[in-house]
Image 1 (tube, rainbow, N blue to C red):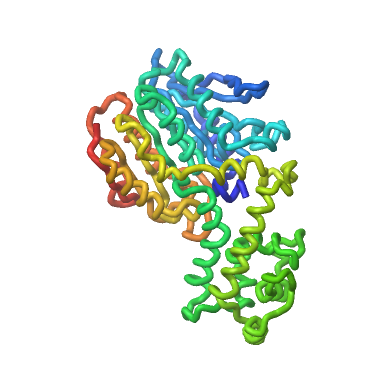
Image 2 (image 1 turned 90 degrees about the vertical axis):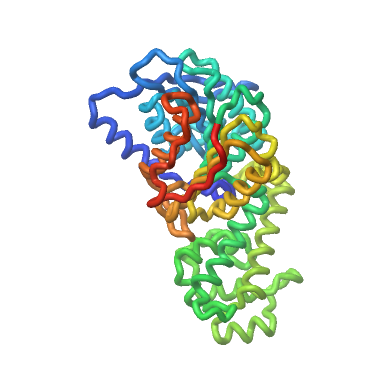
Length: 433
């Protein structure tokens, strides 16, 4: 659940590929300093500060905050790539491992990870920020924080919790904007239903062929969670082992009374191999989703038996106010940049539009939204139904740098037009400082 919450399916192979590319050059363009951050209560984590190879500094500082899941400081390669790009161009960038997590996203402390709450993640980001501010190479008056997915939600809170003079800018990369419950509901119910209606139901009859649904690999992935949570389906089954009989029995079983009897309507439809999307598929997905949420809240998995389903963390998420509802508390003197893939299946781009509308309504003087056609939740080329992973495109990095440069006093004192405007991006912005 945590992994899908963040939908940050970032491949560690990205980091390896980028590292190999760096090794091919003998020109040193940046330096680094390994650090240890004390998170309190005996918990410590590794961090790394990268900064320009030339110049005494102090340099404008940037903190990178990860999204949900088992994440080290490289964040599947995304943060390593961003840190290198920005540090080569004049910034000091700090990234850190999540509490209880080591290299390559490995759990190194089961107790710390299993009992973690979202509020602790916010506190950890705050402590990392304090470490960044006190680095000799960093200008404490020019601090920006960048968060991806759930990290965007976190940096918004950090900006609210700190004096306006402490945080100059925040950057939200495909941020989670709606509340956690609605975000989860969309992943496990809304997205599969949209796919069924828009892709599988080609004739717009309101029903889909079970046989075709079983053979569709994307729909099979959507169904994996619901099938695994259904008592009539084997918990050890995988998408590849899903067969016509299994899926048919699940979709047509009526569990409203706790039984597996087949309704007359279901039996009639089953005879022709069809499933009504709104009458049968939607209730089944909603029922299984609600059961999973209740199971987590009731601590059935209180010991966090799997690394992706930790009750303390999920419960803390469900009590949060959405980013959309709190964005108005960010100081008007803090610049806000939003970069969002238009094919984001984790945090739909419509949510970014709402956040932009809200900031405009509030007359926030400095906010910019740039959306990218064909990019998904990891700002990598993706379809609207499935997130792909890989290096962040150079034009996205160029847009990020251009905005940060103009907002950090490196060389420009005027707004920078996104380099990808007109070909790779759509932009909407307010007046600039």
